[in-house]
Amino acid sequence: MLINMTLNGKAVSVDVPPQELLSELLRERLGLTGTHIGCDTSQCGACVVHVDGKSVKSCSTLAASLDGAAITTIEGLATAAGMHPMQQAFHEKHGLQCGFCTPGMVMSAVDFARNNPKPTPEAVRHALEGNICRCTGYQNIVASVMAGAAAMQAKGA
Image 1 (cartoon, helix red, strand yellow):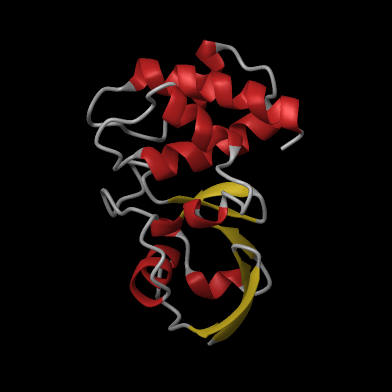
Image 2 (cartoon, one colour; image 1 turned 90 degrees about the vertical axis):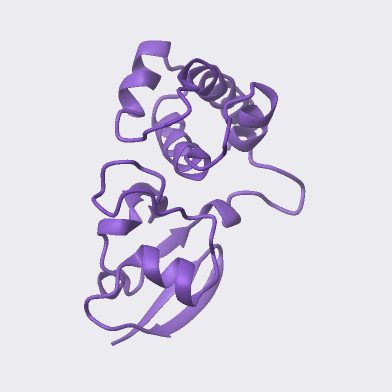
C-alpha cells in the first residue's frame, strides 16, 4: 500500500505492507534510528513519536494507517537554530543516563508540555507513566520536563 505522509517536515511516499509497524518503517527502511525499540509490547515508551502532534507508541501503530499523517520523530524535533527547548532541558538538567529511553521521554514530554504549560512534578510523573527508564533517572527526568515546559512556554514552542 502506498502511503503519503509528512515526515519531520518533508513529504514522503512509501510503499508499506499492511502488517508493517511504524517503528519498523522508521528504523529499518527510513534510517531514523532515534526511535528506539525496547520491549515490542508497547510498555516501555522508547518508541514514542508524534503523529499529527500527539504522542503515539510506534511499536503498536500500523504504518499503513498513517496515510496523510504528519509524523515527527526525535530527529525532527530540533531545527537549524538548535535543539528543541525540551531537548536542551534534558541536556542541562541531566535527564538522561544511558540515553536509551531519552527519545521517547522527550517526545512524550513535548506533547505533555504543549497541553500543560505549567505542570506540577506530580503531573509530570503521571504523564510519563508509560515511559520506563531502566537507569532510574526519574528525578532528573522530572526536573528536565519541568524546565523544558517552562522554556517551551517562554519561547512559544
